[in-house]
Length: 117
Image (cartoon, rainbow, N blue to C red; front, top):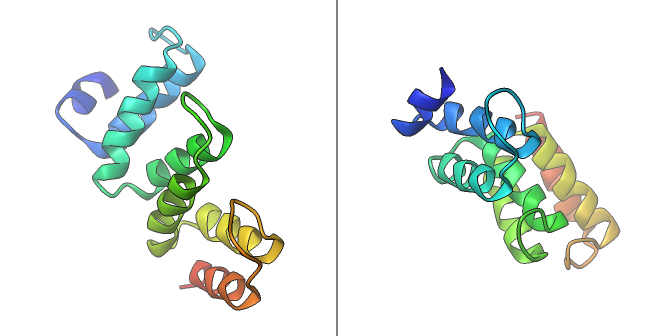
């Protein structure tokens, strides 16, 4: 089901299919490179959950080198859409000076407030 839709470029299906590749679930063998390719395609189309997942992959070096700047960029894209995990991650990063960001309580509060919008 998801494969056909993902192949046609449907962002949500690309994202959900990526989980099968990340975990080697169902008919998909574990393939992190394929999973990241699908997540990236979904994120580029504006799917907030995929943008968050891509930020997470950059933050923890899943499938490539750690890249905090890219992690922040993808978290911000997801957070601007109100995706709560991204808003919380950015708020925590600014509050605790993580991800290469300077401690900034006003930015932490800004991202926390985005969750409620």
